[in-house]
Image 1: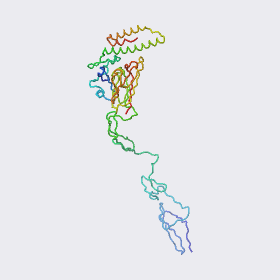
Image 2: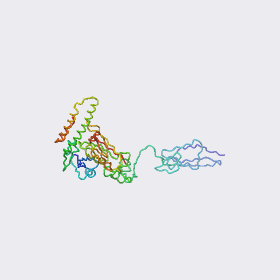
Image 3: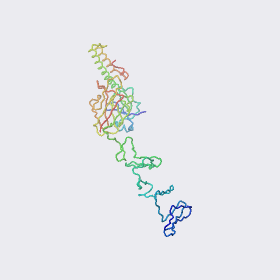
Image 4: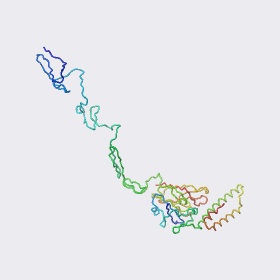
Length: 132
Length: 265
């Protein structure tokens, strides 16, 4: 199994260092990583949580997902999608194409989903909350 | 009155000594002698031969080199020229067969062994062991050192890697890159195996969006990532930080094919 080097970075998240084959991994860890870095098998990385990579936290060699940080990530993603949808709605109005939802309903839907993001108790719930 | 016996003389028996005689003006008998007729050897004395169409023939292999009128020295390396002189062949002998091969190293630290080859064999060039892969040979021909050859026209470092965590982050191929670190979504650090001579190099970033559901990302190398906009990440001689982000909102996005190339001194 391939090995990787992981450590907590300056943002409080997890950095994953993948060596090439130019140097032994011990040399890479000494040269490219901070002193608190550790070598682990890459299979311990929570690959299914890659969309919340910035919410990964490393404690005692175990990587977990910080749910509060994951909510922020999902909210930012949701807001970006909402902004794009708002532009599309405005463009439709400009050229006389009716939107399927009134402005009030659209705003209400956004607020409802934002509340759902804030109340989500798992990354699976967060992942299910989208603009559509 | 002279009554000479005139030639030609005829030898009736060529195997015995013959006397040639004639009478001179005083009617005295004069004798000349031809000895040793037979076995191909004739000794003549007081004889002169005149006349045209005098021909001689020799038996095969009967004339030695020493009997020829030449100049120079005849030996195993000289050849007789048309002007009668013995000389060595100038400029080689044209087509032929090489009968011996030898080699000598003029580079310090390298030696040839196995020569000369006169029929078959192997010439071996031996130099100092390079030690660690990637070392370069110094101009003295004997010392291998770590480092890179200074070629400003060539890339000093490059890598192609999968920036998603599915790999989790896998350098596919690289040169002078010891590792790639994923710091965050769309936020990577490229670490060089051998440090560059200065930080004023050109770093070129490109990538491929990993899903069609997002707009085409922007790709750039330091200094300011969107995730920590107040932090400066300039190039250093040992690392470069590169990013991939959605242009409309600046949020980082992973690329499954990130590329980074460095040109510099």
